[in-house]
Picture 1 (tube, rainbow, N blue to C red):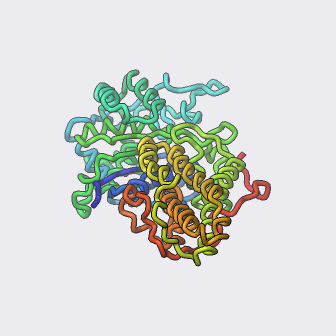
Picture 2 (picture 1 turned 45 degrees about the vertical axis):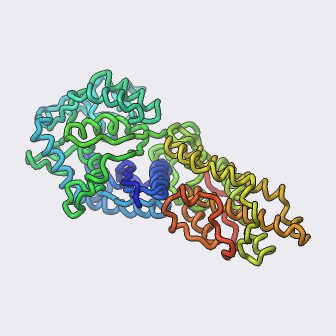
Picture 3 (picture 1 turned 30 degrees about the horizontal axis):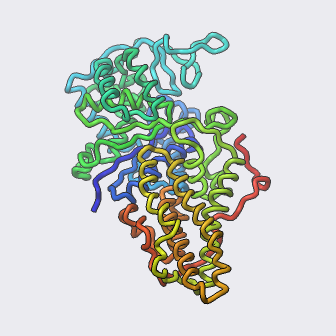
Length: 525
């Protein structure tokens, strides 16, 4: 029986470039939580998609000699193929140019219009096309030529003067937002992001332009012809679209699935998700998301990874070398989620060989091979007392430690907890020396106990590795004669002793063949 619903989102990604390692990083994190909570008994929704409206998209399309819709359509395969490649288990992929998104946007902003939270005025100030953001002059920086530039992307800004816009009364929500942050300290995580947002809101909020009237590439506002929803007033609502908002065909799904448990975003867009979005929800009378988690950047040579810097590899480049599951494992286990993290090919090879080839993969190979050699490829019947062994204590403690780490969004800690068990099993095999026990009939029971315990530990390890490496875990379970899809509760499945004696055990190819760093012709330095 389901414990209830659990709703998670990635950002709705801009279509100005194909997914790179940074966008994949956010998406895999969301998928990791989604997969774990499904195994934990929840009915999980994972929403992702493409942000296709706005001046930046229109300008990019024009530069490509395409209409905006043609450009967006051409980018959809890049995102879907990337998420399929990385085994992302999303439940909805929302394109902001879809009719259902337009319906959601129009219904939401009409609601706020009718409630008096919108007014029409002319905007005077500065606008960054790349960030799709308006700035006061006091917020801008100056470049080496003393020209005003965007504080985020450091590109030149445009002077916006006299354009008629609809404004959302964001300033009225300064105190309600500060109350939210105080009453729910875990709403913004990690703590550094929370402190930044609190300081920003304490400095005062200005009303927000939510429409544009100088171009038409956007969702038309139904209460004023000639105005289209400004990008954040559109894109944020894709989260609602992904769980059935304004969609009568999906019944009460929206009511069942809201509020969201997590929005996973890069730290550069936390302000939109922690200030604008909760204010919008408050104004509309909807519950506010439980947590916005603003993670750090992936860094190469100390710089953020991005296409404009020329250091953004595609996920497929690394998958060709390391495989999908090893790719997922490295980025979720070695880079502490929430902080900026330096990455390199050399470090990827080190983690791959140490954690996967030498520890997890080698453990499966040697234990499966010994099972084939000593027990004709069948799980041995454990003798009485075999359940008392040094592996069981670690295995019995694993769910609590792993669940605590996952609740804290500490993926590194969760992976380390599983690796502690894997390392202990390898040590247990060395200490027990099954190859010696097999030499005498007098130690047959000990041999059966050792191999049963090692195989059972592999079953448990595969269970907890599944959110990180779903395909490899499924394969490890298959070789044990089990089906990972049958797991309804990871907590119940983790109870020691559930591997049936007599199950056929298959050896197969090594799960993670060792890699030679010198033989890899690839660089992100």
